[in-house]
Length: 384
Image 1 (cartoon, one colour):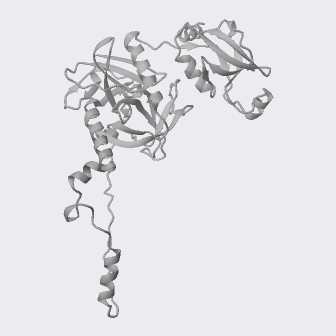
Image 2 (image 1 turned 45 degrees about the vertical axis):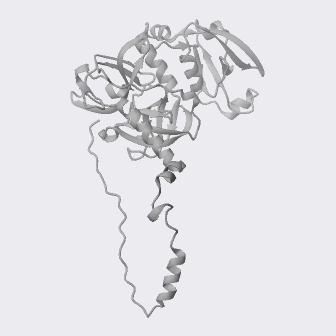
Image 3 (image 1 turned 180 degrees about the vertical axis):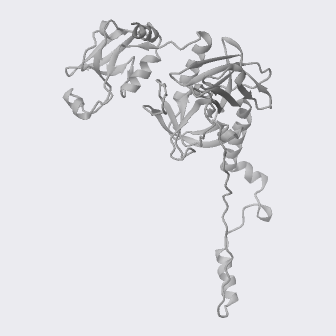
């Protein structure tokens, strides 16, 4: 996305005021000023001593953040790509990425968002490393259901990042967002995890993101940050920055990142198999499961995923799932809503058996479901 940025100096101008009046008792003013003047900063000559700085928690936290940025910034890259659109015009895209390694594949890889490099030829993708080198990928593999892509590059000596465990994150944890907002590479912003499990986001026209389970953060994420890493206080990658909610086109304090555990699994399958294998049940779920319907089904509130259709010759039909069944739990995990269930199923290993707890006619039942391969379902759907 080609864009021109406007920069505004944010200063505070103070007007000098002149007060003219009668004679003033200077002694009273002197005593009042002395009483209101704050005490000098500890240390000799009103300055912090080195010992006081070393012992102060705020300074220690600041040094910790600076150290994290110093160690992780070399693994963050700036990406530029171009492609020819349906209108035959040339479209430019800028984004970010993070360097990773993979235990079962040699070399260095860049993880980024699929939309950053979508439909671009290898020769039209430029990756700028922290040390100034500009390289082009020799291979690109992507997954539209998560908007992730992994690019293989030749970059001897490049420093790779370490994956973190996104399941350990809690709301309120501090995180750093890194990348190239508005093309300004090597930028770092600070915020917290604002929410977890964000789903059903409208990510723009033509979006094909199926697996939505975003982390929400108020760390500043802007156009150009797409594909950059979200870093925890251990210096580990806990998310891949993907989207923002904005009325202005810039940061409004609501950004979304793909959890690292999801990203890591997708990257691993893209490198090992060449594609992401996803399981499926074979049901249609109610996207408008209301309190009224929940009460009719003897639930005290809306929870789980309600089945409104069971497709023939699918894992669901073979497991005897029925209309109006409410799936409460999948493989030991409580189901929050239909999108949560879609995520849980599609990210489960193909052809394995899963225990599904359902509510039927006011009673809980446990069914064993042998999951199928979503690719088979899609091929069957495309067959005349």
